[in-house]
Every structure is written in C-alpha cells, then in structure tokens.
Image (cartoon, rainbow, N blue to C red; front, side, top):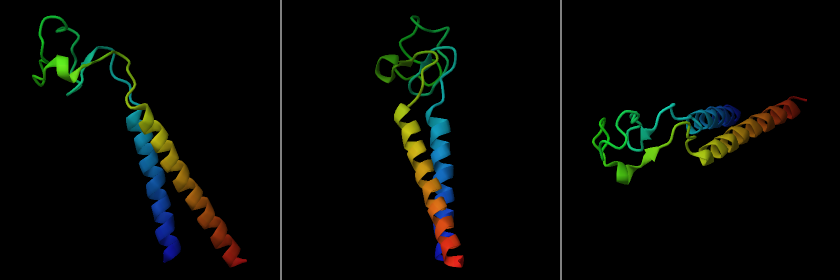
Length: 101
C-alpha cells in the first residue's frame, strides 16, 4: 500500500513537472501582445493607450514583444519536479526489487 502511494506521487511529480515545462516555456505569437490578456496589438500600437481586447492600460500592463519566452524559471522548476519524481520512482523500483530477492 505504501509503495503504491509513493509510486503514484512520483507519477504526479513527473506529470506536473512536464506540464510546467511545456506551459512555462511557451513563446508568444509573431505579433506584440497585451501583458494582461495576451491579445494581439499589431494594428493598434501607437493609436490607443489601452488594449482593444480587455481595455487595460498598456502603460501599466506592458506590451509583450513578439517571440518572447515566458517565465524561464518555470522551466527549471518543472525539470526539477520531473527529475524528483523520476528519481523517486527509480528508488521505489529498486527497493521493491531488493525486497523480492
């Protein structure tokens, strides 16, 4: 029962880590976007002080440049979580194998 709990926790860590890596390293589109809603600002830059999608002031929310990568620390956190889950799973398999011998 305890082994099942540890193995399920390690699977959750691996899946969570991979999810963080994938979502944290997403690139923005080919156009500048709003920092609040990620709406496309390509046709409105310079003509309006607010986002046409959400109405947020661009001076406070910021403009995300084209091709910008999001949250580089999230990728590292995801890799650490996935690595911890994988190590936990490997240790659990080795301990189960040693107990069976």
